[in-house]
Length: 274
Image 1 (cartoon, rainbow, N blue to C red):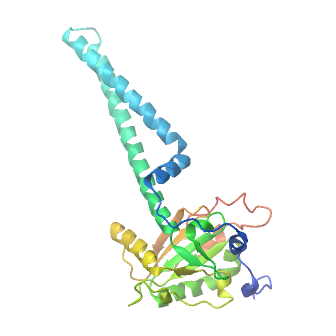
Image 2 (image 1 turned 180 degrees about the vertical axis):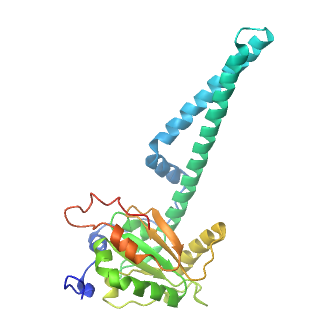
Image 3 (image 1 turned 90 degrees about the vertical axis):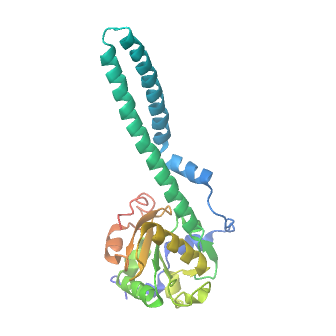
């Protein structure tokens, strides 16, 4: 029984109600393109492109001014060295800011590409319906746990004391036992959930795709997989946080707002830091 006398097994995750109610078919399974990633980055940071354009004009203008200053220096013109110094300073500062913005945009595009690839991975809901993670955006705060069967089962068990609050916040657990020996491409490596568990646990399918994504990320970042890993997603599908071991369930339960009630929707973006 929950702290309010409600049996957790009888609770239905609000995110699953929304997903079940959706009548449109799943989107085609295809990777996100560079153009789509760039457009999403522009939406997230609409003023970055404007800054890049302005900084480019500043560099061009100051560069042209520097050339004129050099001509005046050759003619011993007054204040030529001062003007050259000012223009050179503008070029240096604007170039540093431009480089920072370009680097930030590249990092953001790579992040969106990774999130898009993760969003293409599929899960199976309690009614047998298969959806991509991207189809759950706006409906569920997905928490993915990867490791061996024992590790992911332990992570799911650790969430049980906070189940009622996590369900109210729209949390959907995805335990993926991708590091079991011989898991390969079989979906049978995913821990089997009971009918009650399926009301807040979604089973990953096509485990080979899940494993490929996590192996790419761990190799590129040099993250050891011993002890298991977790990734928690925001309501909009962006990665909120990741780490080794079991997710910090107590912090998640305390920080995540409810997806229903008077403040449901108004606090959707306040996903906390874990």
